[in-house]
Length: 119
Image 1 (cartoon, rainbow, N blue to C red):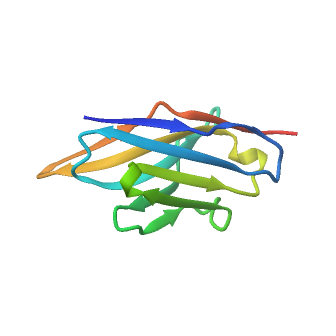
Image 2 (image 1 turned 120 degrees about the vertical axis):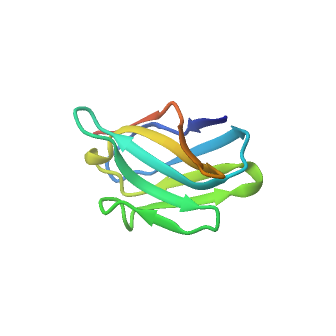
């Protein structure tokens, strides 16, 4: 089992910045990708960013150039730096890890943290 705890959400004015963190605990062997996803009211959950254990990052098209994902392996933490925020970035942000152990592949989710961008 892997437990994920997100932190850093809140309210911010358009154009502002927030930093989200996701800290993993439990049995961490086999983790190969950590991702951030978000869900706005009435919309489907969408990919925001992912980062592999080797540090390769990927981003959803709507956040490229504004968001940056990084990881601190020693602290089992993945950080999402969000800049130039706008109202369309509002939603609940979830952290997820993909874990492979042998033939078994599972995704674990955090509880989510709310981000609100509003004037």
